[in-house]
Image (cartoon, rainbow, N blue to C red):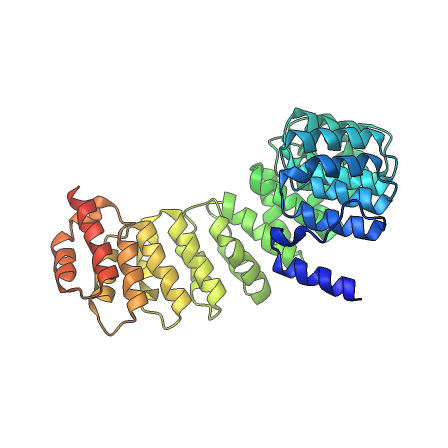
Length: 392
C-alpha cells in the first residue's frame, strides 16, 4: 500500500526529475510495468531503446503490453516505429498485438497503412481487424476490403468501417443502407459519414424524411446537422418541430460552430438565440461569427450588452469576426463607458483589431477621440494599434 501511495504521489507531481525510483530492470514485473508506464509519459526519447528491448524480450505479458503502449507516445520516432512493426510480427499474444496496432495510430507513413490493410485481409481475430479498420482512417489504402466489410462485416466491423470512412475521401454507395439500421450507433455513424461526403439529393431527402420517425435524440441531432449543412432550403416546419425537443436542440447547438453551410436562415437560428441556455446561445453566436456572413450582424448586436458575460463576450467576438459595419460604434461605446468593467473594455479594444481596415477607416475620427480620452494603458495601447492599422 505504501508503494502504491508513493507511486501515485509521484505521478500526480509529474516531474521527470522524480523518475529515479522507477526501475526498468526491477525483478518484480509489477514494478517494471509501472516504470514503463511512468517513464513513457515523460516522452523522453532516451527510453525508446529500452522500451523496445522490453517489448521484444520481457517474459511478462503485462510488461510487454505496457512497453507497446508506451512506444505510442513517440509518434514518428523511427526507432519506436521500427520496433513496433518488428514486435507485431514476433508477438503471439492478441492483447499485445492490439496494443501495438493502437500505438501505431500515433505514426504515419505507407508502412503503417499497409500493415493495417494486411491485418484486415489476413487471418486475424475480429478484435485485431476492428483495430486495424479504425487505423485505416488516416490512409487511402484497402478500399476494396473496407467495401467488403460494409457488405459482409459484423456490426462491430461495420461501425469501425463507417468511423474510418468518415475521415477518408472514398465514396461508398453502400453507406446509405445503414441510415435505416436497427442499431442507432450505426445510423449515427452513417450520418457522420455524410457530413464529410456530400449526399446525393435522394440520400438527403431520405435523411430529412427520417426526422419524422427517428426516436434517438443523438441520431436525430446528427441528421439535423446534415440537413443544415447541405439543404439550402430545408423544410422549416420539420426542422423547428425537431428542435422543439430541448435535448436535440442542445446537441445540435454544440455542433453549430462546425456547420459548413455559412448561410443558415435567420428563422432557423432564432430558436437558439431565444434560448436561456448560455451554451446554446454562445454556440449560435460562434456559428454566426465563423460564418463570415454579414447578414447576421443585426442578430449579433442584440447580445452585445447581455447580462451574461459569456454571451456578451461571444457577441463581441462575433462582431469582430464579421467586421459588422455598425460594430465599431458599438464597441467604442463599450470602451468609452468607464462604468463598464475594465476587462470588458479591454476585450472590446482587442476585438476592434479584427475588423476590416475599410470599416475601421470609416470610424477613424471616433476611434481617435476614444483613444485620446482613454486612461487605462492596456486599452489605450490596443486602440493605438487599431489606429496604426488604419493609417498603415
